[in-house]
Image: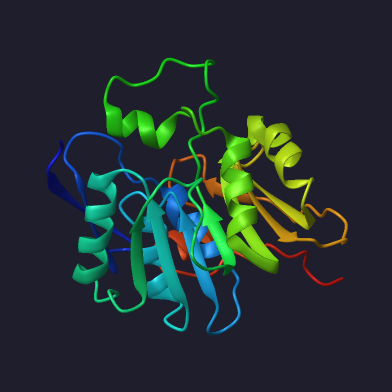
Length: 247
């Protein structure tokens, strides 16, 4: 079992993250996902498959008025998430549950955020490192299972926000369209003029509103630096709107 020996920071050092020395590394996707969660004051948010807690930590820093719960089945990740919540002073607002994403929960949530494994089962070489494999590749729990788990965890009218690879958007939509509506899809472009390689999707349980695609976010300039818009989110904790701008 890996020890928690590496320390990294998010939001320009505002959030400290301890994680396994060997294995999956926290990426900007977690910060972007947290920035896209738009919840009412006092809302309850579930970070499904929380890993070391990065999404919940960033959200807790940005929104101290929310009650956040993280869930992960890997004991090493769950232990790291608890330690990170305490280290950052969020232990009273960020609770961690060690359980499978498909396990029934004792309560429902106003919102669910998730960053499920990106690699489709059977389509890519899986890392030999068990924790990296668990974080990056589907196993017995497929994308449809993650979406079903989010649906079951939400209150009526609850909101799901997820980040995924753009080339799996058809799989994401196949899962959410059965129970969700009011879908907004935000493309994430690595550079101006490049095809999106990630998407953030927001959907409301039981909504009949039509699908919308707001303007995408470009992450890097041609020099490789973050764009001003991306920098304001990734370094300074600005929210990432998922709604269409007013005409």
